[in-house]
Length: 454
Image 1 (tube, rainbow, N blue to C red):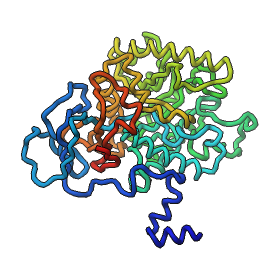
Image 2 (image 1 turned 90 degrees about the horizontal axis):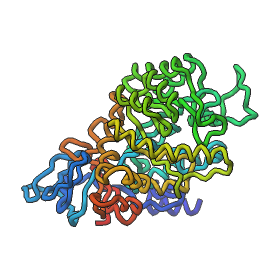
Image 3 (image 1 turned 90 degrees about the vertical axis):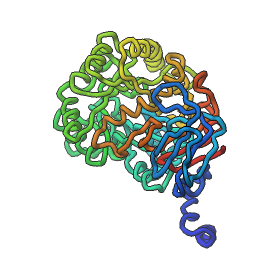
C-alpha cells in the first residue's frame, strides 16, 4: 500500500496501473505512442507497397489522421510536417497473421483451462504488445475469448495489433474444440458448461439448432467471422486426424447465420473428405488442409475458396509430443505441407498465411521466423505480399462486420497507416524478421508510432 501511495503521488493513476499492466514486465513502447501532432513525412526510403511489385525508390510517404495521405515524389513540397529520415531502409505495410490465437498463444493449455480468467487475460495483454513489437499490426483471431482484449487495444488501454475476432471455436462433441476431461462425460440436459466453454475458448454444439445458437452467440459478442471445427487435429485429446466432423447440414446452419450477418465461416480441417464437405456447406476458407488431394484443391479453385496455410514442417519450431500416435500425425501433416504449397501455386488458389501458435508460450517469438520459412516455396517479395496485401483481402471478407473499415495491408493513398521501417533487403531474404528487436526500426499502427529506433 505504501508503494501504491508513492506511485499515485508521483505519477497519478497511470503509475498505479503500471504495477499491473504487463505483469510487471516494463513496456518497451512507453507511456503513449506518438501520433497526435502534425502530419508525418517518411523520407529517404525504399517502398514495398504490399502488392508484390518491386521496391520503389525516390518517393516519400505522408501520413495524417491515421491514414496514408499521399505517396509523393521524394523532392515534393509538403508544408509543415514531422519528417522521419528512414536512412534508405525499406518501408512496408504492417504484417498480418491470418491464423492467430491472441488469448491462447502465450499460455499453456493447462493454465488456460484452470487459471483465474483474469490471469489468462493479463498474459494475453502482455503478448499482444509483444505481437505488435514483432511487426504484426493486424491478426485474424480464429478461436478464443479475445473480445475484451480487442476492446482494450482499440481503446488504448493496452497496446497490441488490430484483432479480427472469431470468438469461441464451434465444435461437435469429441471434436477438435472439445477440451473437456473424461470425467465430464456424459453431459446431461442440466449439466453445467465446461470451464473452456465458460471461458469462451470453445462452444460445443451438436445438431443444426445448437450450431445455429452457438454461431449467433458469437455474432452477438462481436465476431468478425465464425470458426468451425470440421475435422481432427494433431494435438487433439480425442479426435483422430482423419476424422470428419459436423455434418454438412450442421455446418450449413453456421454458414447461413454468418451470411445473414454479412460475414463468413472458416473451417479447421485437414482431409479431402472434410475439405469437400466444408466447401459444399458454403465455408469460405479452409484452415490447414495439409492432407488435401488434387480433387479437393481443384474444388477450392472452382469455388474461389481461400486456403489458410501454415508452414507445419516438423522442425525446431514444431510442438513436441510424447506419444507415437501424435508424432505420426505430425509427420503426415509436415509431409502434406510440402504438397499443399505446391498445389496451392499450381491451381492458383487464393492463399493466406498464418502461424496457428496455440498453448505454446515458448513459440510465440518465432512468429516472424514462421513467415520467413515460406521463402522455401515462394520468392521473398511474394511472401511479403501474402502476409500484407493478400491477407488483408481475406480479412475484408468480414464485410460489414469488419471492425476496422479501411484498406489494410497496402501502402497506397487512403489506406490505414500501419507500416514498418526495417533493416533488411526483402529482395534477397526475410531473415530479418527473426530478430524484430534489432531489425524493425519503426512500427506504426493507425498513424501512431509505437517504436522508433531510427
